[in-house]
Length: 583
Ligand code: GCB
Image (tube, rainbow, N blue to C red; front, side, top):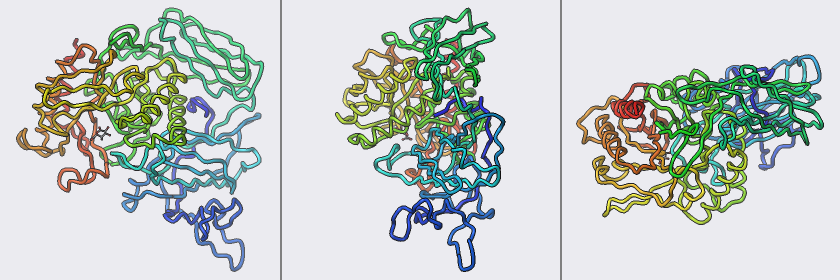
């Protein structure tokens, strides 16, 4: 997987793609339900032009049927609102390579869920996982100067042994949901990936590595012009280990989101990007950013534009979502429940928002399956690879509300260890559940996974799922772990614009009351409490939410409704955050 695509010579393949909806998978399987051979003329990756007299094609792409890429299909045509299944996407393109020897890659920001990719009738590859980037090498022999025929079979059917599984509390948007690009790399000594981060145990030492695409015996230069840094490192087996001390510099933080242009080069290749330098660490029960205790004024969010009921994918979308978070007084966002578009974390870097990033290991994944573990690990690796130079990202989360069992804890522990091994510069966590003891008002977090996380995070809905908001008054919170404690979710629903007295559920006033009681309770949390990311910034589509008056297919726990209007509770949380900001 190649990282830092914005720094490359690319050709965008975004725009209108023609499509065929194929609920019976006719383009992929023949009438005996055998997978079609590559040369099968009826396969939907084959040419849709009749070849001669008597030839009739029972499929075809047509400019009357187009979908925008990037974008989910569900929001683009009312007929797609609830569609889950296969859609074939096709676009043609001409392509003139730039001068010199190059390797060409076809890169996708994300396709939900499975993508089978064909160019000029030949399969380039298959990828599963709806929220992470992937790329395939395009053999020179396949690329034509004119009229390349690119077809992607996108299948978003849900399965019990995929990640996520059958059951989630969000809509399963299908499609080529993020950018598509052709990317050119030098044929030799190309820089495929690198990690340039502060050593968490130091205040000024940069540690990391640079990985090259198929080369031996060359060297790599890392330069930070604004700090007059220029260092050369030897490459062994396509990898250069780097470490050097930074001269006086400004640390990245929410108050000072300073990033430095870092230039990495080999004899044939140069990439650059802006990287902020900061440390994040846990000391006992404290969470330390740049060595100082930090309180996370967070908000959870889905990757969705509520006013249009669609997936977010652009810088403009990121600006709206993160802009709302800033307005709320946040210094942190929990990007739930899967890796969001890269524009989100890049913008978080420049706005000074700390990020919790998560993979969709959600609820009842098949924890007993080695195959499912491999799929979860793959998504974890892809998430970390894409974003491991983002100063904003401080926590890799390996899942949400997974039910405690020996199998599950083993599965989740493996993911935590995988994340740590891959990126020792950040913290690892997962959103856990709470054990209630109603008589004594005791609420404790003793999930065995707590032993393996850096931060103990839990979701609580005291006053919504069970009881009323005033139940918060006597609640006593505790955990058996001597680690920072974080509330990764709390929330209540309200239909935007529905006003009543505060005892009326679904009203904005009830949600406001809920937040008031929660805030009062937060003030009495144990000292190890380091922050909260309530559920959720904005209303989002969920097929599980079927109250015909107050939900209609939406989870309305948003502080902002699906017309983009702030609900009353928004201002309760905003006031609390403003207070916290002032110390
Ligand atoms: C949760 C889940 C989240 C749901 C939320 C809810 O605990 O983590 O995905 O949407 O509760 O609204 O019930």
